[in-house]
Structure formats: C-alpha cells, structure tokens
Image (cartoon, rainbow, N blue to C red; front, side):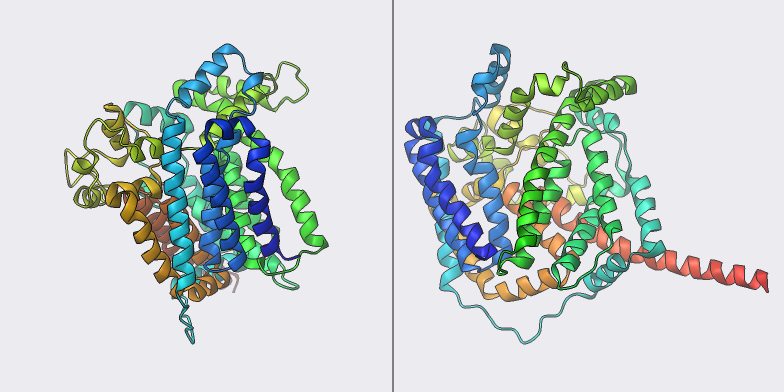
Length: 494
C-alpha cells in the first residue's frame, strides 16, 4: 500500500464513521453532517488523484482541523463541572444547526468546484523550471550549516526575543512596543526551513542530515510554549508532516514508515501536553509580571508525580478548550449567515484592504482612521471596539463577502483551473527547495485559514521573504568578517 492510498482511505473512513461515532451530533445536524461526509469523499478523491498535491494536503489539513472535528469537540463535556460547562457554552454560543447547514453546504460547494477545476484542466509540461537564486542560496546555507549560519541564527534569535508578559499585556492595553525590525525577521521561518531541509535530506535514498538542524525547532517550540503559545509544537508537527507527505506520497509503505507512524502517535500526547502547559501559563502572562508565579505554575504543570497537578485535575476541561480552539468556526458562522451589525462592505472592501496592507508594511500609519484587521471583525459583527482580536475570517468567509454564495464556487473553479496547469512546476519547486516549500505552505495555509490579505501578505508572504533575504545577506557579511579575522590572526602569527 502506498502513502497516497492510505491518505485517501483515512478520509474515506473518517466520513463513513461520522454517523456511527457521532450519532447525537448527526441527529441534531443532519444537513451539516451529510455535507461533512461528502466533503470527506471529495478530499479522499483529491488525495487519490495526486493533482496539486501540496495544495490538497494543506486543504485536507485545514478542513479536517477546522470543520471535521466539530462533531467531537464536546466529547469530554460530561466530565466537566457546571462552571466549566458554562465557559465552554459561552465559547460555543455562536453555533446553531441552521447556521451550520449554511456553512457546511458552502464548504461542500467550494470543495466540489476545486475538484472539478483541477481535473478539467491539463497541466503545462514545462521543459525546465528555474528556481529563484535566493532559494538556492538559502538552501545551500542551511543544508551546509557552518559557523556563519549558526552565528546569524543566534543573533536573530536574541534580537527577536521579547518577554511574553510585555507582548500579551502590551496587546491588551494597546501600548505594545514595536518588535525588532517591526517583526519582519521571523526566526520561525528559519526554524521551519531547517526542519524541511532535514526532512528532505532524510527522504532521499542514503540521505544524511545533521540533527543540529532540529535544534532551532526545539528551541522555538520550548520558547513558544513557555510564552503561552498553545500551538508551538503543533505547527511544526503539522507542517513537517505535510512536507514529508509531499516528498513521499507515491512511495510504498515499509517498516520505516510504520515506525514513523508509531512515532507520530507517541508524539501526539507530547503535542497535547505542550498545548496544555501553554494554556496554563497564558492567563498568568497576560495579567501578571510576577516571574515567580509563572515559574511556580510551570513547575506544577510539569510535576507529573503530583496528584494535585492542575493539568491532570482539569485535563478534560483543557482538552475541550483545545478542541474548540482548533475548530475555529465562529467567523464563518457570523459572516456567512449575515449576522452583522455594521455593513461589512463599508469597511471590508478592496480599497480599505489595500490601505490596511500599506499601514502594516510601513512604519506608522499612512492612512489614519482605518480600523486594523485585528479590530474589524468585532466592530462589524459584535459592535465592539477592541484593542486586539486575532479572529480568523477564513478564505470561505472572505470569498462570501466578496462574491456571495453563488459566485464563490466559480471563482474557486477558475483558480483551480489555473493552478492545475502549473501543478508540476509547483511540485518540482517545493520538492527541490525547502525554503520555497516553506514560503508556499505559509502563504497558502494562511490564505485558507485567515482569508484576509491584510494578514496573509505581511505575515505569510513578506515576513518569510524578508527573513530569507536577511539570512543570505547576514551570512555573507559574517563569512566576510570571519575571513578577515582569520587573515588578521594569521598575519599576527607570522
């Protein structure tokens, strides 16, 4: 059996299992459940076809995470007390069966349009695909490692460090200090390139990869978890799995793959544990500057021998919160069911979108009196003026706001038709360059998950590109400096 077959079978059986494993949910949400099942079958066909593989892997992940775990988000609800249930119900207050039918039928129409668009178009067989020089350069730098690269990584890590208390409390008050280089130099991008370089080397026959390439991933995961990021390890595991599947999709499963699957299952509790630890620390970081309180809470969470460990005592509540966070459908429910207070098109239109993008990319604000994307959702749908809210609108929500229910599938069909023609070039570039794969995955994943160009362009396109250019530039400078230093030392010896 190939990995391709296993991936398709997984989604096929996942769809068939919904009426059996989630009977109560299906009885209360018949239309949404049927739409989920058909969506699973379409994703299985997309993966089986192997067309536009990298894009379909990202789509499969996003649909599974956001839409398809919805029947199981309240699986631990009977284990919660009254206060915890009230909290979860407040988080889930946006949900209703009729609104769910609208959202899931729209999702089904978009997936169907994507499937047809990919399969009605013939790919262009390009004789040669030219990888941009910058990706070749950064690929050589990271794969080689060396003193220059690691010095640059340390410098950027130090310059990008910001205490979590300053970050969270600055966001809540609206008085946060600017990040180094306005946040354009992303150490996360560097860590992800290191991970992809490692996976690409290991996927080749006889390929060797230095375990040092995993150190930035380990450091970024630990730092993120200690800073209250519930997805610090999760995103590396998911992005790494997507890229590994892209590299090995048509290969037959062997003993090594079985070991990797077992390792993934063993890693899953660790991913959950890091998320629960971050969830434990997050409230303290948001409202307190007491480092002792943070350290004490961390120790209590890590002390697995303690019968009063807060993670174990509230593990069902913590898992339920994480599941609801993963299935982030609030924006889709509000947007697609027209539950707005202020007319969306007045402030969410191409002109104001362009203004917000320019404001995000330039120091200061060129266009004043424009609500940022972090404030816009609450204003339009809740009539609240908040300091910051990172609500994900999703590509589904943005397509609806721009094109409505009936034109959105047509737009997706046209996009899929165009993508299909260049799918071989995209696949070749992603497999040959880990840096290109990082940029592509971050951009496309951000487009699906967030849907707003105001975030996707600065965060998922500009920031990774700037980081790649800076790595190459700083390594060159560092290499020149080390060579001059070596010459000076050799001259003194003589």
